[in-house]
Figure 1: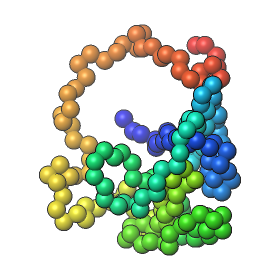
Figure 2: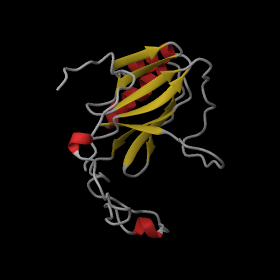
Figure 3: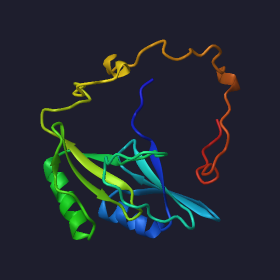
Figure 4: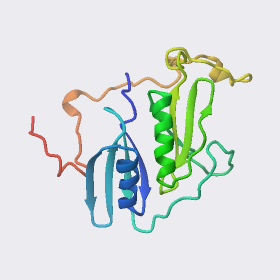
Length: 193
């Protein structure tokens, strides 16, 4: 199995119009789909050819309190930040200047050794990083374990290990596979096969 990226990440907002203006008009991500029913809307923005970010608009949702990216927390927690890739430092600086000109806080450019990054927050408080590879450094091609005390599991290497999880005993036969209609299926009808 080979994944082709993150199909989409789903966030929430109480103000979809402000969210559209930030993601579409400031960052330049095309608005590629909009679904809705009474009580909510669900809109998608294109990050790349295979990746998107989506927002549910639910009444009463308020922006979260901004937390410094990577700041240690305790207790129930699920999400720190999302990082979007750029190709060059010039693009990173251009975006930094656009975000600043729009009146949003944006960090200085930070050198992480293998990437250069800037940090900001969207109007919903979503913590965002924008990163570009340092020339000649690509950890996807050449993984690096720089942690001086990695766990035993991490020391086993970057590749998938076989026989860690139970094997599928009885796969679903093609003739018995069913795909059930979900939200959007009525809007995006395809010819029946």
